[in-house]
Length: 158
Image 1 (cartoon, rainbow, N blue to C red):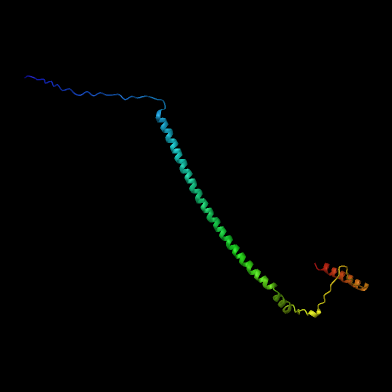
Image 2 (cartoon, rainbow, N blue to C red):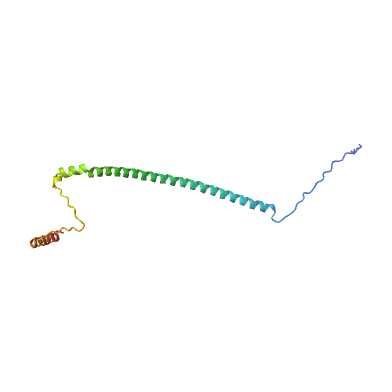
């Protein structure tokens, strides 16, 4: 038996392997990326906290405004009631103090009579005029006794 070796002219393609260039740097981009991520996270948390604070303050402001509007409405209601009562009392006061009402009360309840113009005497005094009332000693004595009696009664009645 004979063995035949065939030799072919074909050769397998050569593959060249290139080595990547690697450079070692202390800290590198890895540490920088971590710092950037931390700063980004912190900024996001701050933004959310700020937004949440603004929302809470707006809600609180609206609640306070609603509360104050309620107080204003209550005060307006009280003011309207007070003005109404004032108007009623002013009308009653005007009715009571009117000339015709006073005359009716004076004549009806107190029994007074209208003034007769013939009973009125007008006296005109000059700048130097003086009116002197002469009193006798008996009138002075009676006046003093009357004053003393009234004082005595006043001191007995507290």
